[in-house]
Image (cartoon, rainbow, N blue to C red; front, side):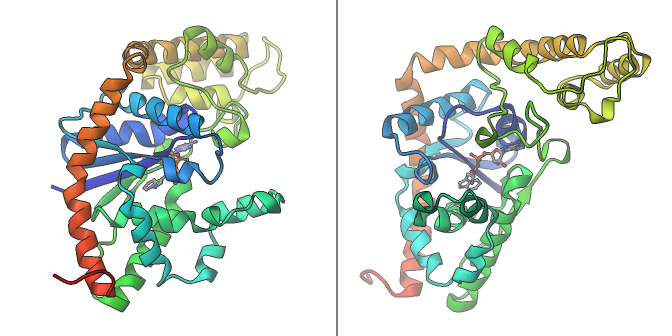
Amino acid sequence: MKRSLSGIKSTGIPHVGNYLGMIRPAIELQNDHEAFYFIADYHALTTEKDGKAIYDSTLSVAAYFLAFGLDPSKAALFRQSDVPEVTEMAWLLSSVYNMGSLERAHSYKAAKDLGKANELNHATFMYPVLMAADILIYNSDVVPVGADQLQHLEMTRDMASRFNAVYGELLKLPEAIVNENVATVPGTDGRKMSKSYDNTIEPLTTSKKLKKQIMSVVTDVKTLEEPKDPTHCNVFALYKLFATHDEIETMKGNYLAGNYGYGHAKLALFEKMDAYFTPFRENYTRLIENPQEIEDALTLGTERVRPVVEETMEKLRYAVGVGRRK
Ligand code: TYM
C-alpha cells in the first residue's frame, strides 16, 4: 500500500481552502493508502510566538480532521513535535543543500519582501528543509497539498536527490497530489484564501458567523437588474466548489438573465455551505469539549509512525557517520 503524508500548520483555525485543498483529499486517501497526517507545530513557530495559541490551535486542527472523518484506527494523526527526530533529519538535509536553492523559496522571498528584517528569522529560511524532513523521514509516496506547496515539494525531491547522490539511494522521492478544481481556493476578496490576507471563511464556525463571512465576499457594483458575468465573480467561484452540476447551471442562467442580485447569490452560497458543514460542525463541537479524546487520537498516531522514524534515522545516522555503531 502506498503511503500518503501531509501536514498543516497550527496557526489558528483551518479555512475552507485548507479543507478543500488538503484536509478532504487527505482523509479520502485513508481508504486505500497508509495515511500519516500531522499538525505542523514546529513550522507554526516561524510566525506565531504565543505558545498557548499554538497549543490550542494544534488541538483545533486535530479536531477538524477527526470531525471531518479521519478514522484514527486507519490513519495516523499526530503532532509534528511528538517526533522531534524531524529536526535532526532537517540538519542532515541542511548539510547537503545549498543556501542558493533556499534563497529561491517563495515563502522566504515573501517574508523578505514584507520588509520586516527583524522578523525574518532563520527558521523561515530553513522552513523548506524541515518540510522535506517531514516528508522524507516517513518514506512517503504521495503528498496531498494545495498548489502553494508545489515548490516545497520540488525542493523536497531536490534535497532527496542530493542526499542520495552523496550517501547512496536512501531516500524515496515523493509525488505531490494536487486536485485541479481546488488547487487554489479563492478567498472573500478573490485572492488565494489565506490567513495572511484576512480573506478566509471558517467552515466549522457558527451558522451566523459563516453567513457574515459569506456576505463579506467582494463583488462588483452591478445593480440587481443588470446581467452579471459568472466567470468573474468570487461568489460564483465559491458556489461552484459546493454545488451540483445542475445547481451551477441554474446559477449561471440567473447571472446571465439579470434581475438576480449578488445578495441572492450569496444567500444561495451560504445555504449550500451551511448544509454541507452542519453535520461536521456538531462533531467538532463535541470533540473540542473533550480534549482528552483528541490527545488519545494523537498518541495513537504517534505510536503508529514511530517505528518508521526509528528505522529511517538508524539508517541515515549510520550512512552519514554520526552516533554510536552497534
Ligand atoms: P498550510 O498550513 O499553510 O496549509 C495546509 C494545506 O492547505 C493548503 N491550502 C490551500 N489549498 C487550496 N486553496 C487554498 N487557498 C489553500 N490554502 C492552503 C496548503 O496547500 C496545504 O496543503 N508547509 C505546509 C505545512 C507542512 C507540510 C509538511 C505539508 C509542513 N510540513 C509536509 C506537507 C508535507 C503549510 O504551511 O501548509
